[in-house]
Image 1: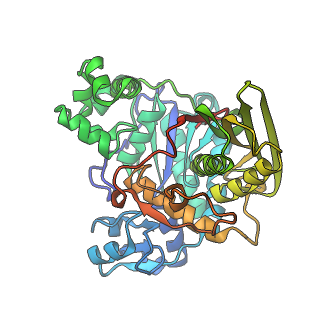
Image 2 (image 1 turned 180 degrees about the vertical axis):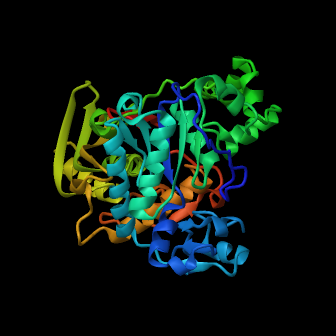
Image 3 (image 1 turned 45 degrees about the vertical axis):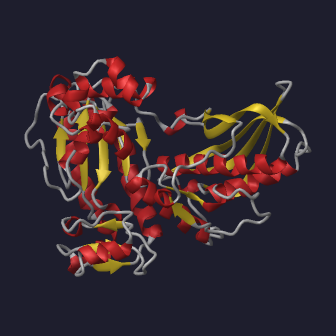
Length: 444
């Protein structure tokens, strides 16, 4: 995979045989930083960092000029300024980012109804049904990149391939401001020289394990027996990375209509009658649901509580919010209220689940946060955790409330402190009886 500073860039500059490359991954280049530069054109070409200038702040975004000094998003601001003392720090303006995201996403919708938004600044597009009207994949992608720049002043990079995984990898290799098309019959040649970190799902720990087996490139993984990979990283993980190493990815572009809800649930090995334990699970599940919502660029208006008892009787209770949300703390506050009003706080529980319905996605004005955001403090805390997880891995930070042995406070403070996992040592589970936590209903 190309480095974040744009080195190793590879692009397609002339029309190619792209009939098999029908999936586009469009990714805005240094999106937050680029939006800020629209207001400060005199800073173009300079190392610019977006974030709050404080010792406890983290980098929200950085221009490619700053990245060449080793500055990356989710990095502590103090570290960024040590690496690049001449960096210019600009405060973030999230309403601007939402505004430009809405404009860009509407351009995607003009090309195809098959658009899967992955957040505020990227999406998958299936253009297989658009070629007859709009031309080849090369022509569609080139026209889209020109239109984005002409109407917003922003730049985007596009990867095109036969699968979502390869398309996303291609867009990262094409950055910044590039297009890379990988026809199906060139997929293996494109993949195999790349480092194992290019494989979807291979984070720091998994990479370390695989390198311990002498596997350094995607090609190494591709030519390793399945049972060896499964011994190294588990049955599911081994099978997944072997498929990806050969360019096999059955996932299709999923439109908002396909995703009706997002949920997580946990089944206990033994029934749990401790109401505080259930509240802790509700908090954890709400956080997981919120992360998936933010990753999908979605908000939801209805929260749903699911309870299953020892006799397998199952009930659901729901509440519709005044404003849609993608915040774990807000979801928890509401679903906890539903639980406490259910009349089952003393009933032994076999399964508990949290689900959010009535989803709206980036670019849909119905999903916008209201003018007065009562949850602003929580929002800042959770988006900071998102940035840290993106940089250091999904287990790197968690809400302090989930690490305490005592029960959750009755009215948790907004913006609960986060703790780097590296400072905690081995991470304990919420309890020995929580045996399975899994997505419910909606898909990631």
